[in-house]
Length: 344
Image (cartoon, rainbow, N blue to C red):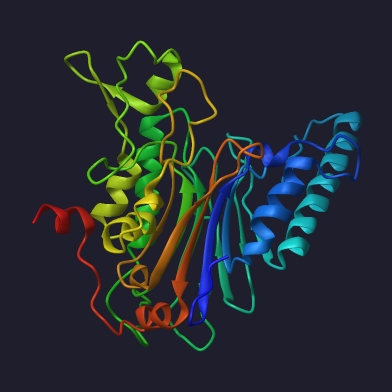
């Protein structure tokens, strides 16, 4: 693992396919879950980690008219979920948060190292999501700036839904303002978020080629309908609403920053799609975003390969602790919005 000549903070995100799978035997965690946590996540000692598909770490509410047998099955499922969630926190040495399940049955979660961040509050106000995000307000010890953090999993099946979800994210980044200090309206904050966006980024500056949705190699037509919009001339255009909204609101994709500001072009490698046939190949749909001050603390962004463990690779971004804190204090100017900056 790379070492640095200064203290760093490590942020990460992983969509672990269906949480590594169910328990084959009560109390015995599955092999893919164990490998993901013991081989990939725990050794990196993340300070903040977003997760998607906590499928077996959270359960659905029990219907009021459930039978006694159904209630007993739900109780056992909840015990197994709580056992796995507790094991995750213990192995990572981090405090965990998990969203409720929504229409999608693979909830999100977040893990925070409490020696690195103070937990200020938890919010569950983002209601339009197919899969509710996990949204927690943090602070660095001794620094007043609140840090809005969120882990999300955008709708896999609805371009309109993802656009609505993107605008819900914009309600959080709305709090990112230039002020630092005792603003009574608290309209100043930092932003740290990551998610499986289930669609491509804005393609300017990307190294992964745009999908030709009319190619005979695209055989999963339902997937095409989920990921692209049909144009009046019969062609198809990839959806990019999540990235567009966050970029237009001034946020920065940490991997894009590393690639174009630090020369780390591998940071914008594909993170998913490699395990699916007929969908167009690898895509960079898992992304992490930061506000235009703190993103300047990024030192390195890595795509963590998870072959044999998950259908998504993980993300790791490493930031200078000193510069991150300077960004929280607004000690330097923010970066211009990325798209506008590239266009000049």
